[in-house]
Length: 99
Image 1 (cartoon, rainbow, N blue to C red):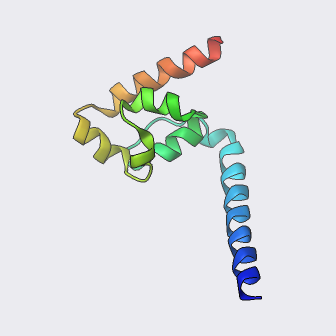
Image 2 (image 1 turned 60 degrees about the vertical axis):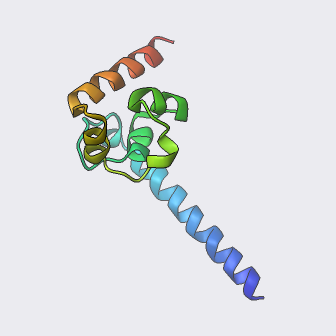
Image 3 (image 1 turned 45 degrees about the vertical axis):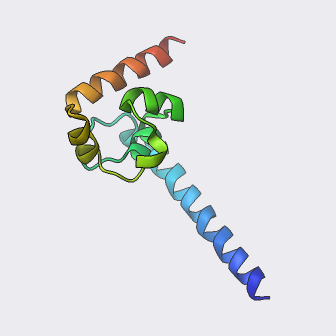
């Protein structure tokens, strides 16, 4: 019985998370937002509807290991600015729009 309750609770948590993320990023004001330092790679992927490969092209590194790091820290380590990252992102989104 305890295992069932734990499984049901975990299912509920993931279902609520899915609904919250879907509703939040369905709002047009949360799509394609200008980059800010507080954003994470995961937020960037949701906001710009990027696949893992596209996110890797934009960031220049494997995004799975850094999904919870703020962009300001990630970019400082790489030595690039938010503007440079925004131009990479704009190029990817323009290419996707042209397809």
